[in-house]
Image (cartoon, rainbow, N blue to C red; front, side):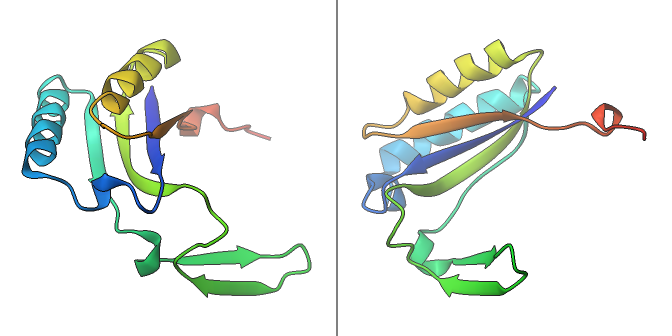
Length: 121
């Protein structure tokens, strides 16, 4: 099963300007995950000031807002797409991943919908 993990952190989190030690620690973790065959892809993202939010209302109007997202307490800092046998394995991995960070972080774990799970009618 594939799982998407997104980590959220504050806009002032130290991960936006990582130390060489953190970069090395994260690099080792990612390489180990790749070597184990569970990692499909993983990337960090820039702070929301370099992003945009596109929202469609129920009435159909579409609006784009440039970052930063002042209403958000936390923003997505990165994501990973991984293979696990079940949700429990994915959650344990997310705990190990979260432990790499010194500051507060939240990791959301979501199973990816596979094509054969979609309704046929």
